[in-house]
Image (cartoon, rainbow, N blue to C red; front, side, top):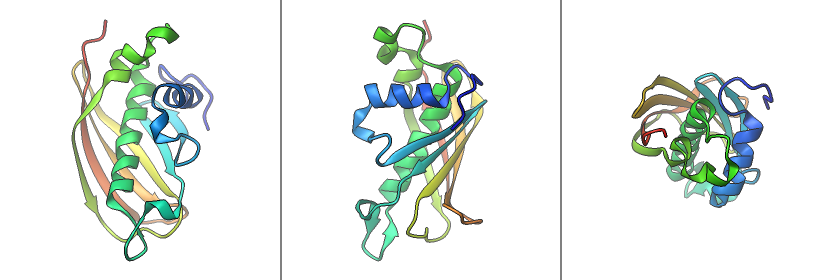
Length: 156
């Protein structure tokens, strides 16, 4: 995990924010923020039977969640949530929402952790566009590729 202040939030700050303001995603149990870097985020979906679909493959909804959360973390890393902890949940970063997310499933993922590497291609005042490559932990070939657009509310 990176603790250096590279963007507006470090990996540790993103983890703390998500745990406090978005507890339903179970940071630490289902997802881990491994790195926040300029215009990037790396997250891990922790393997568990709860993420499998019939046939023993990691489900599409689990992979969608990883892609969506990785993009959100990359955006938080860049624009942050402000300096007032009491108002963090109402910041532009926190209120950014997915407007589109497309996934191409490339191959069956292994039954192990899944890594999502998000990269912001454009971060404007109102929209963020990026992609997420997903890999089975330790695997070389990507198992899925997602392209996402987020709407960013006015920053105030």
